[in-house]
Length: 316
Image: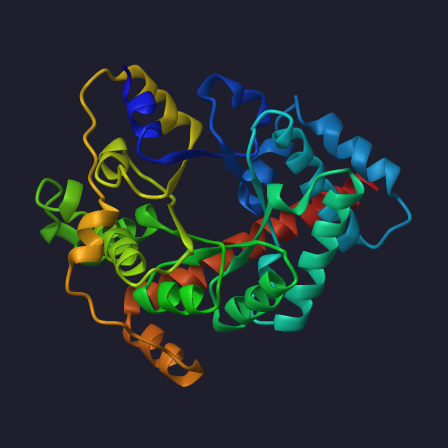
């Protein structure tokens, strides 16, 4: 049995791509997208007609509405291939605007519902800022399920769990990137691999905390740099993996044992923690890696959202 099939026996495998033509070969249950992945897809010749067609069909609408329709169109194509859920992201430029995030999320969900897709099959992706978490809490109360992304710190995860969020996406690879860059010439790759990988340690801490305290929020490790990070998180609720790394797992027949164990976490001595807004902001501020990577992630997604806007304006 290959490693991808072994992983599926412990963990729900999710494909991290806007490239729906590539999905079927890996048989993931869910798929996630973001502005960067959609931009990458629409720049490929096989997807360009889908963008043009959507833009032409909705010519008279405001640019932000056309963008949402393009995102949803990709989501609809993905849902033809995966049996589970698709994650569609709210514009990262709204990451500090609770009301605008809520309004945009409602509109995206309404577009899916108008296309006959039930709410259970869609997750709205929102950045894990304080405002984003509060917006998601409001949406969850309305039955709109959310995926809180750009999550780098324990305090973000605790706040999401307390807010009753459906799912979080802690970013393993970007945490690893920060520590590697920060260490410079002193970085020891072998000593910081597997269970000692800083991104793996972060997700493990969150997973164990949630299981110990009965937090229902699903943990989905994201943004992987190598299959070693994935192997070290086998047993996590979900893992969202790029097609390149899915192919590597599929090509290996080596044994892949479970690494994370909910039963063991429930027996561990892990104290409960709570954050109000001031406590959350201070805890995030004290974590240089999380502060920098959250800000950088929002900036990068905002740039790609802007590029998608420009592509659509050109088509118009």
